[in-house]
Image 1 (cartoon, rainbow, N blue to C red):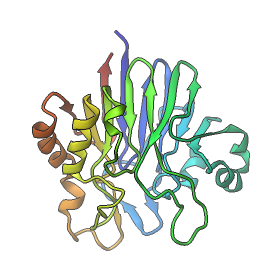
Image 2: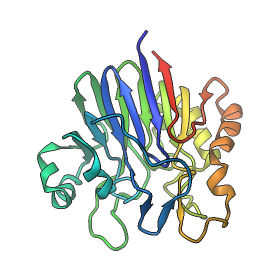
Image 3: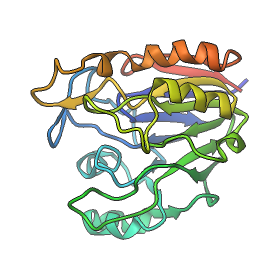
Image 4: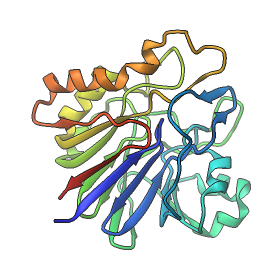
Length: 255
């Protein structure tokens, strides 16, 4: 029986190994990102060079240029449609390695298929930038079917993504407020799990980055989203199994 393994390195940084293919998702590998500081867990320790990096959208806590430059090897960069031009400007050496996908598009990375799926989230780089590309999620199909949601709110058609073996679902954020538009909190994340019908679920996008000087502000929004998601999921999606990972911990899912 083959096993798909995922290692959560905090926030939305995930190492996914499936069918001998190594994928790195939305990497933030540094201890600080602008006004945000890593407040839990060690800095990510990659086990080697990935075959590809999946980037869900242009926000700096997902498309982090300094971290991308630090990744070893020459991995394929799978980016949202419209993001390759930005990637080429900030990393000219990576321009030839970019593959753009829009919802419904797919590409092969060795023995796995990577399909872009919708996400309900603003895809701009930020208010100071004119760079825009539609935010996406990914379904990776190898030994298992794994959905990485990226940043998203609930959206029509989410039911169509399932059934899945594994869902990586955002349940929090990086500050003491979480906008309802374009994000999932623990309760909405459990509803997303109910819709996609995943055998296993792992909460991500919480408990790692927090604004400098605000470590004691609404601390429950930093510490609790993962366990709260598990509690809500037990009621909303009782047939799914939730694993709340520690930073650097690995889950193996048999398929």
